[in-house]
Image (cartoon, rainbow, N blue to C red):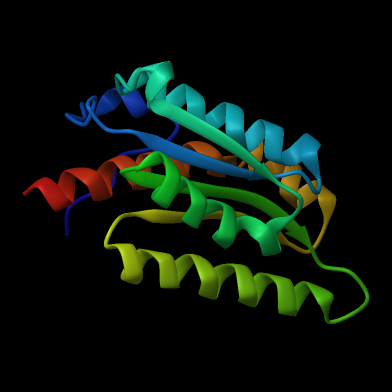
Length: 159
C-alpha cells in the first residue's frame, strides 16, 4: 500500500496543477475555527504553486449552505476543484446529525454530478476543543488536509 503524504508537510510532494482554478467555500459559523481551516488550505495551495488569482473564496452562512455555494463556484467561476470548509459541533439536539448528513450528501453529490473534486473539509466534532485541535492544533489542520486531497484528486484525474 502506498503511503499518503503528510498534509503537515505539503512541500514533501510536488504537484503539477498550477494551472488550475481552486474554489474555497468557508462556513462562517464557528468562524474562529473555519478561518484557521482556510489559512491551512491557502498555505498548502500557495506552496503547491497555485496563484492567488486562481483561488476564489466564497463565504457561506453555515455548513448546510456549503454545497450550494460550491455549485456556484463550479458554475460561475469554472473551478477545477472546490474545498468546502466548515465546523459543526455536536449539541444537545439532533440538529448536528441533520446538518452533518445534509452537508456530506450535498458535497458528495457535487463530486458525482460535476466530475470534479469537491472536498469535504467540514469538522464534525463533539466539542469546541476537538475542533481547535483539528484546525491547527495537535491533530494538524484539516483545511490543509482538504487542500492536499484536492491536489491529489486533480493529479489523479490527469493520469
